[in-house]
Amino acid sequence: MQATCSAYFSTNILMITRSAPGKLILCGEHAVVYGQPAIAIPVDGVRATAHITAQEQEGVVFDAADLGERWRLEDRPEHPLSRLFVATLQRLGHREPPPLRIELHSSIPVASGMGSGAALAAALVEALAVYIRGAEDRQLSPQQVAELVFESERFYHGTPSGIDNTVVSYRYPIWFQRTPTVPIIEPITVGGCATLVVGDTGVRASTRTMVEHVRAGWRADPLTFDHLFAQIGQIVQSVRQLLGAGDMHAVGQLLDHNQRLLDQLGVGSLELQRLLEAARGAGAWGAKLSGGGGGGVMLALVDAQGADTVRRALREAGAVQVIETVLGPY
Ligand code: PMV
Image: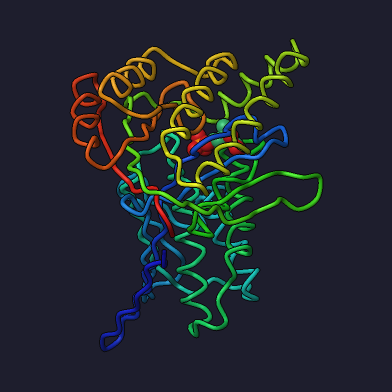
């Protein structure tokens, strides 16, 4: 999967456009915060985009119409995207911000577990790098982008594992595991083909709140929670092997099992449950929430022929948006 990048020149306008995909956590969320592995995939059908243009008047203007926000860098230096802008500029060896207009758009559902914040941040970092450095061979590496985006994720999430910023920067399915030093990041091989049908409950849930909720449970009963995290870690190991072998039916069963453990962590919800049951009833191989939970999105693994039936069932069960993406060889 390639990032989308383009530059338009007219008499006196240079516009740099860069976009980054949304993401889904296939399995392992929450346990990944405690050192277990997780698998995440980019979702190219929904994207965040940054357009950067030079402007004549001094200063930097951010215009994020989809978020209902417009601000000047000097007025809101504490805004996470202002901070990210300054950090990226420094990383690129620039101190003084050039006069710029930065337009941000996103088709990724916000606060729903699809990585909208991380994708916006990655698009901004990459667009700025292209604007400042120009030549492709002097661009930031995916790892450098991921590190910059991680800093802005910390603002929103408190103690993020690092999986969201990594998958939207690398743009291929990843195995991700936190360690006391650097995280383990490996590409995932997918040997078969399936469709992921994603249903949005329309309930916006804060990842930070859900992560804190799990942490409170872990503090109260570390033995039980450590055991649940370890079981999720084993599921992720098995899913990796089954994906490589192309046994999507068996992957589906493990996703159902992962959901039962997520319910025990206390991150399910009635709205999620309704969509999960609808997807299974419509013939999905398996289904689970994706991301922080408490609302947000769920995913169902289905064969390509069954996708329409599951899509309809999710709509009838109240999904406010349904997105499809292919899980197959990259
Ligand atoms: O809700 P999202 O898309 O930000 O996903 C969060 C995944 C968690 O495992 C719950 C938190 C994390 O930082 O990994």
